[in-house]
Image (cartoon, rainbow, N blue to C red; front, side, top):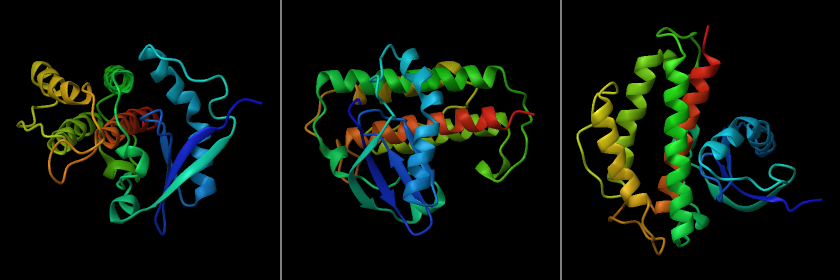
Length: 218
């Protein structure tokens, strides 16, 4: 039997997020710890192609067993539907190899979202997720959210229109420049996010909406 996959749990009253610190973007939620871990295992099949696109490789035993290494208390952000608590593992240093991994996964996530959007209709199935956003509103939401996330790592810019390809590319290049640097684990700006947390929040958000868009295709 291979090694268990280390995970963290963010626990609030009505929602729990499970995430894999070593693999930003592999993060799912459930009403309980058990449901969150089950969802994490289920989504391995969707996350693995992202890893491949990033030029990386998951361990052979990834997802076979989970080892909960830390639990953090969730808050209103958790209940709303986003992993909002900074954990101990998020404060660990970022080596050159880790920085390259973070950037590769984020760029792969953006590529996945672009691919899904290119093959999705403008009008999506309505449902409880995302307030019923259609394709273009979902893409705009991702771009707008990234401008807010970017400020947490010291990057400030006016959000470009989602269909301004050059503007989006330039904005994202600024995010990549920061996440591609080594770090001792502290936030790059006061009241900001540690780079590891920023990476996992960014990749999670992009993939969450890419997969939502796939699920809401007519």
